[in-house]
Length: 67
Image 1 (spheres, rainbow, N blue to C red):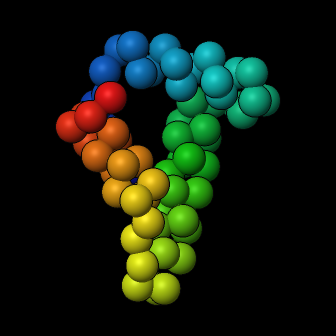
Image 2 (image 1 turned 135 degrees about the vertical axis):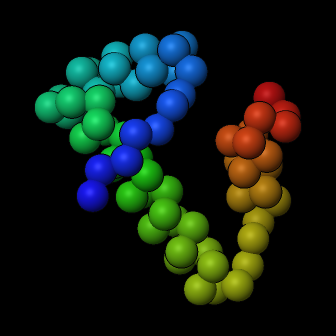
Image 3 (image 1 turned 45 degrees about the vertical axis):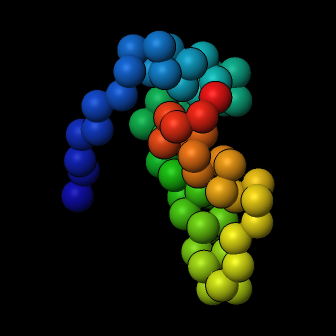
C-alpha cells in the first residue's frame, strides 16, 4: 500500500539533495528509510519505557514547537 504525504517544498528539496548524496535511488526510498529508522528508535525507547530529555527536545523540534 502506498500513501501520499504532503511536505513543505523546502523540506522536499533537502530530501532530494540528501537522497542523491547518500546514493538512494529516489526520494521515496530515502523517506521510507528515514521513517523506518525513526520508528525503530521510537519503538525501542517505548519498549524500555523511558524518554530522555533529548528525545523530548527532538520530538518538540520535529513538531515545530521549538527550533
